[in-house]
Image (cartoon, rainbow, N blue to C red):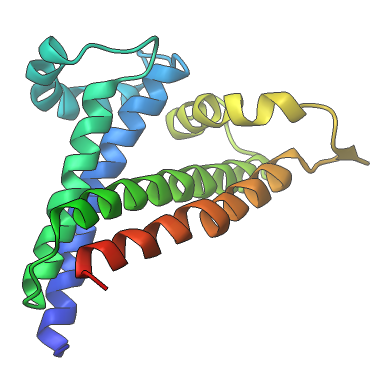
Length: 191
C-alpha cells in the first residue's frame, strides 16, 4: 500500500472512530445514569441527539441501553470497513463485512473501557478536583465495571480493582474480539 493510501486509511479510521466514541459515550452515560447537568454529558447529548432521535422512534431503548446509538455505531464501523476495503480495491463479501463490523465494534468497546479505566485510575492517584466534569463523567461510566471488586483488592492504600478489570478487558480482546476479527476478515475476503 502506498503512503497516500496509508494516510487516507488513517484519516478514515480517525474520523469514524471519533464518531463511534461519541456514540459509545452516549450509550455508557445513559446506561450508568451519568449526571445530565455535567457539561460533557450535555455536549455528548447535544451532538448525538439530532442523529439518534429519528432512529429512536423506530428502535427504542432496551432497559437503559440505547439501541439506536449501538446500531449507528455498528453501521459506522461497517461503512468504515467498506471504505477501507474500497481503498485497497477489494470487494468484501457481505456476511464477512457484517461479522467484521460487529467484531470491530466489540473490540472498540473493550478498548474504550480499557482506556477510560486506565485514565480514571491514573487521575485518581493525583490531587485532582473531584468536581471536574471529565473525572465525574468517566467515574460514572467506569463505576459499574469496578463495583463488583470495590474494597476486595486493596493492599495498603492501593486499590487493584482497576488493574484486575483492565486485565479482564485485555483478555476479552485477545480471546473473544481477536478471533472474531480474524473470522470476519476471512469471511470478507473469501479465504
